[in-house]
Image (tube, helix red, strand yellow):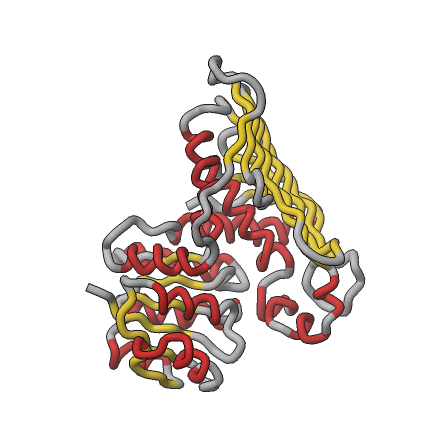
Length: 345
């Protein structure tokens, strides 16, 4: 039976259009209620959701109390997200939240504990986990095709051009007090999570540099160069920044005793690997993903199915917390010039 859903958002809620489209397409989603104190999103919700839209309101707690959703989708600027997530959990909702969902990891940790205590899912929006090539890369690593892991390189570079737009700089993800950070909390976070998802490794210490190298008038970083130490003895690096005039450069490379793999977003060959664990196969192997939907529509569908009890959550609250702990520890390390331990829990 389709489950009732609440969307907790505000004017210009991040990725709201994509999330609404995902809710509209998901067969596991029944009636949808929207809470937005500005009311600015109601018209778009009506257009996208059509007959699925049950109610709108400006008070999130009143809406949760009246309509009793089983699943809440929280898409808000980072500083506003924790109270909304807490309210949804308090009313018995599984939650999917736009990342980073906090401006410090210590604000997210009690939400994870509350969700676990209530046996509820708390899922950050790490939609890249569902990409077929990411799942195939995970299978290869987890089955031992690379053997013992030696090192990783995580790389996500976007365009500097957007930072020259005053509107972008004034958005919440362009202000540290509202977004918690810059490129790393908004974009780099996706590929950091992918590295942990694929390898199963956990970060235990971070060091490096973070700052504004492009010189745009904003108080969040446009450049990060991080060194990572993992609990399994592996070392890694992370490059996360706004450098290009347009587009993205993005990849994850993993090296091990029996080979290596590279994951990227090239449409022709998005995954390639070499493994001596396969003696009957010579040379570099490649994987081309099937032509199936990617992005937030399948992600919303997977989260709704998890909320309905039809599958495991695509990410757990604890996994999301580990990524946030690493990011905010890195910011502290860069500020202090000292290596910082990453909290493990």
